[in-house]
Length: 260
Image (tube, rainbow, N blue to C red; front, side):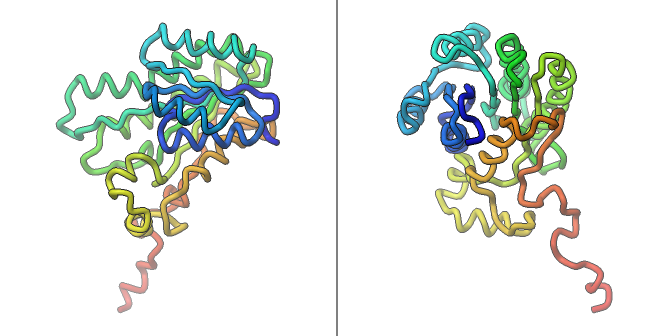
């Protein structure tokens, strides 16, 4: 197994996507600390994994909670090898976004990653640690009606590079993963649970002609968390079904239209 004997922390672990990441890491042999503000959802997610998992109800924007996450992990498993920063806010009103929306979203999506990384760093040093920050294809493109979320995801890519630079001396690798459209709580809510509709809407923007499955992205995260990627740091990995490879012409051939 990729992560046998390793200890991982996963934030945002009560979400549909976060649960799958935690489950995948555990399936690869890791002991996992699931972190979320959703107490009931987090407990349920941890229970579904079993003895290899423990849940901590915590707010990643609260420094005391951040320290408690680290303390619980060390008390339970005496070390930290992997930190997966998934906790995320989608609070975005585009051009009409308020200062409060900007500050709260950047606090959850960006600042919390830096604070958790800093808190975990001393306990990951010398263990070949790996930090994976969840970004998005939204970090690279402009999207109508969305300002706060894409800006926060772009900041995460840059934060990842900076963390990788300064944490390299401790033997800690830092990378980000940028999914395309992936079946998640927000997709479930917006489509009213219609995965077929979600795939149909996503098809023109993905070379795979569908939205991704959370397990597919979770496998990429598990790979980056493992020693098999020991040479990889400071990189943003596209797990996006080819979304970022496409240009405005998408997967259609535009030149023949000139000859028609």
